[in-house]
Image (cartoon, rainbow, N blue to C red; front, side, top):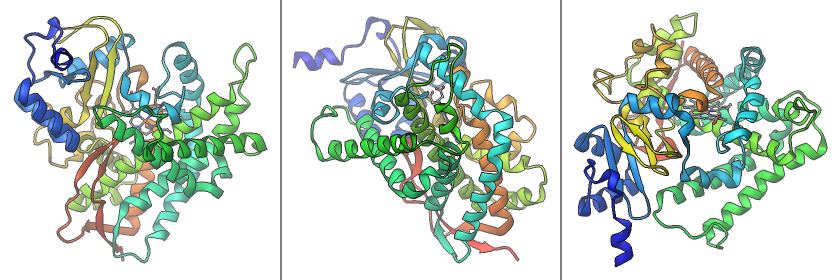
Amino acid sequence: MDQITESFKIPPAFNNSPGPRGLELLRIGMKFQNDALNAQTGLHTKFGDFVVCPWPNRFSVFTFSPSAIRHVLKDNQNNYIKGREYNEMRPILGEGLLTSEGELWRRQRRTMAKEFHQPRLDIYKDTIVEEAQALVRDWQDKSTLDVTGGLTDFTFKVAGRIFFGNNLAEDSEGTKTALDIETHRANERMRRAVNFPRSFPTPENIKGQRAVKHLQSVVDHVLAKGIAEDNILARLSSYRDSEGEAMKPSLIRDEVMTLLLAGHETTSTGLMWTLYLLAKNPKWQSEIIADESGQVARACFLEALRIFPPIPVIARLTKEPDTLDGHHIPANTSIVLSQWVTHRDERFWPKPLEFRPERFLDCQLKYNQDGTFFPFALGARACIGEAMAMLEAEIALVTLLKEYSFSLAGGFEPKPNHHVTLRSGNGMLLDIKKRL
Ligand code: HEM
């Protein structure tokens, strides 16, 4: 009992901080298990921009204000590392960009950044166009369909080809399934208050470990047979730093797995919510087709990322004590930033639930800076694949909409569900009609 009382104890710095306590904390904790998105909205509505939750196994600080978001992600970013949540991703991502810290991360970021600059994007474009056309063909006989599977296939094939060349083609399904299994395991472990160690042979752990071994063997196999084509995996394996040192094979594996995981489901989820919002707002389908520049498609995608951010929360851990919006924060505090809440805050986004792509038509650059909109995060650790995701979205939307119109299948309403990315718990059922 003493231990339980001890674990609910609030550090003196948070004695008078707003947030749920006692039974209300337990009730909200349970809500987080089943409906984390609305639980966050509820915290914000009731307690405001700064909320302290002393959970039994840790305490979390939710900060919803743009100034705090900017502070954590940009202005004082060196004081914030990736929190415990990211440890759950380490079995597949190892020391890749998403999970590494410090000098290793800095070095890797410099190396990997070259892969996502404009000259490379121009080369990736052909692959994206080909896969978007393949998706159009796959959907040609459909009248009603769940678009989730096709969109995930599209982004997975694009990522597979750009990162691995044709090497993934023979085991594309196996790789996708293994990634899904391990992401599911990580997600469940993040949600639960208490977990068995990963090495303990529960059915979930056994399945997860098999999936991780499978993923590792896919990359090792490609590296061992030698890579004839030009792709990211090939370039990383021939990379030499200024001292002539090659990258360790295990690090190459971590990097390509990171790209594959971070780079496909986020984009397909964003596209799925965009098609949903376009189905509800057909006027914007015509606007996309009429626009030669691709800007309207991009604005529609950004507006969808605002209402349904594929990564709906970002967590960080303080290294040293800090001050956030006037609140003292001790070292080793878990800070949660919520795109889901801040993107829907009517102080910054009038009529926040309305789909209004015009918000992004005139201010394409402003969006990523002020802390009211951060689907790709901000600062030095912002998404490295942002430009690639925007290019994929533009090409996919323009290609699909020139061929088809979309409307909501009768009576269908999606159920947003936070599962690492923001999925829909019941898929995304749309009616699809060939344009005449
Ligand atoms: C709509 C699509 C995407 C969204 C919404 C998105 C979102 C994000 C966010 C929020 C982060 C920061 C995570 C954190 O710091 O906790 C991130 C990081 C990252 N993303 Fe993306 N992403 C998308 C597409 C992509 C693509 C296409 C790629 C790869 C080609 C990619 C690769 C990465 C990597 C490697 C990182 C880690 C960067 C670092 O820490 O240096 N993402 N992404």
